[in-house]
Length: 164
Image (cartoon, rainbow, N blue to C red; front, top):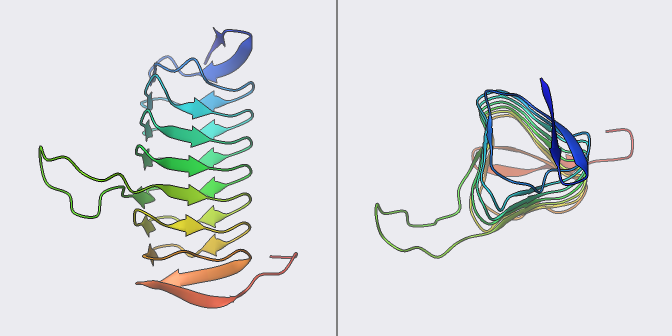
């Protein structure tokens, strides 16, 4: 890894990644084959694993882990201490059509939430603080704070406590 200076911030950016943004926080690591577009904002102490794509209108907080194979499209906001598992899929268009305008659907993942591997998060969804989405789930509606959701479509399983 090389040390790259973005203004006064230092980050570890793999030479086989394409990081166009200068908005990368201190102690953030971006691994190989990842692309970060110029307007994306990534906080401090984040880990962006290999084969990730981060579009312009994306904001990532501090202490976030984005595992391999995740694409973050315009309109996604991820707050602090969030874990996004490998190959999670996000959408931001309810009715996608090639070469047609669309209405951007935003997604918000609140502080300390976790999204399990292979889950699908539909546009317009908010995942609450400290919520957990089980692996392989399809999230079609908002998930309240401190709840575990799982399934296809994802549904409430139980409340989470401080030990979860």
